[in-house]
Amino acid sequence: MKNNFGHSWRAYLIYVFLGISLLILVFRIASLQYIEGDFLTSKGKSMLEITRSIPANRGRIFDRNNFPLAVSINQYDLYALKKF
Image (tube, rainbow, N blue to C red; front, side):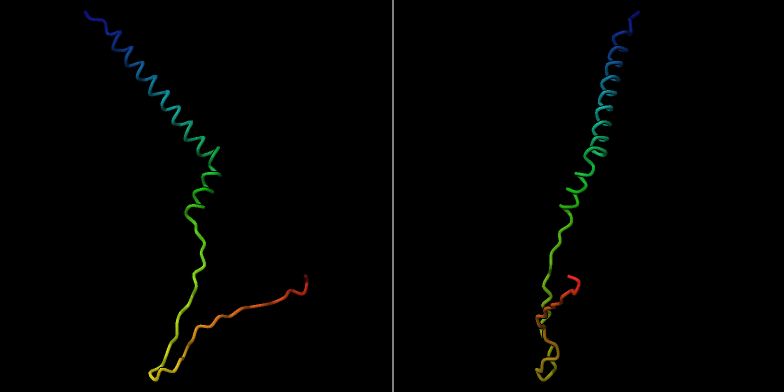
């Protein structure tokens, strides 16, 4: 009869290796979520959110006699607050 000690020893070694690998993976996922989560969230948002102003030059609208009905003009607002 052949002894199956070698086979069970190899299986035990594989189970230990897989268990340690699983623990390392769970620890890494937890550290990314809880320790570095805020930093990674802000970094991701900064890469996805871009704020730009787009000029709205709409052009002119003419009637059939080439008379301008609507023209884009630059307009500036200036106001003052009395409290300051």
